[in-house]
Image 1 (spheres, helix red, strand yellow):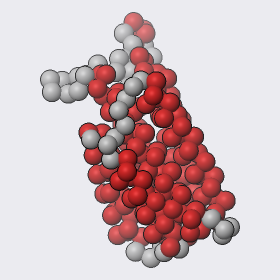
Image 2: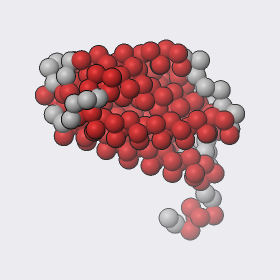
Image 3: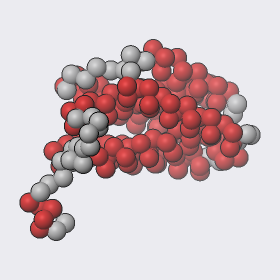
Image 4: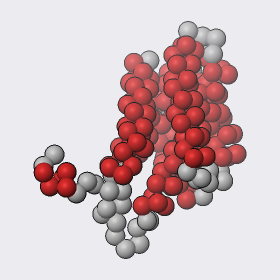
Length: 191
């Protein structure tokens, strides 16, 4: 960091243009969408565990599910502490997350891992974008997002190590899940 950076710490929304959300709105949207995303991830893993929980891969899925639950717990706290309205789509993500997890797990272990890789690929980019928008005034939230991003990358790498790319129809399934994840992010930010 240069001396100039120390005199003028980066602030959230510091590059705000007309029409961009105010910093408070930006942070509320981040918390809302991240809360929804971690809730959806927990539901995906619940669906996968319902199908694959007794297989050897169940322990791997359970470990990732426990990390996602910790992420969700942190965002539950932030939603309450900062009085952020959760997305109105929570009931949709409740059903859709579980269904996606169960359906991919029913297709086999590789397909379940392909689901993880696709979702985490989008989420790692999403968290990186959020981290870049947060200033020193939101260092605690930025650090939390960076920590969770590292764990999401770990989940993606775990999926790849479990032969996700060898799942039948991997490319098509991956693009479909990524598109759905991006849509869920867009909707949960706003609704």
